[in-house]
Amino acid sequence: MINKGSYILYVSAVNCKFEVRLNDFPVFNEYKGYQFHNGFPVNQLMYGDLAKINTFIQPVNGKNLLDQTIEFLVELRYNGLESKNVEVLYRYEFQFGNSPAPHISVGVEIPVYHLGFDPTWRSGEVLQLSEQTLSNLYITYQRFWTLFHLNRMEELKTLINLREETYARAF
Image (cartoon, rainbow, N blue to C red; front, side):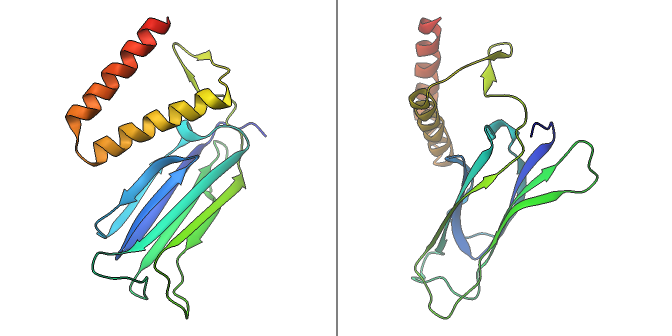
């Protein structure tokens, strides 16, 4: 089904370290265990008819196991153009069980509404990218994200310049 609505990835977390990825791209992460509540539009990461969401949860520093003080919720929300209601397509909420764990990793693939476009750039030209090329692009952008998150700006600048020079030579 093709639709032109919007997707929002929402996370609410307390007392845990976490990372949430959408289609292998890190959208949210918090490595210090601070309270976190945020939603982010993710249309640019949606392609095809499936969305892959990976969630990793760990205890805060000084603790070895997840416990009952942790609160964690992730949702993929969809708001269609003609709909006044927000539809929750995916929801995961951490539930403390009887046997504490050192971490939790949850991965799902869920059907989504196709937005009617493939990844595009260069004045809207549609690119037919191979799986290998897409994989290489994701790896590059994951490096961007990691360097930015670690505040390693000089390395990030070098990587961006290298990327731009590589693409400039390709055209």
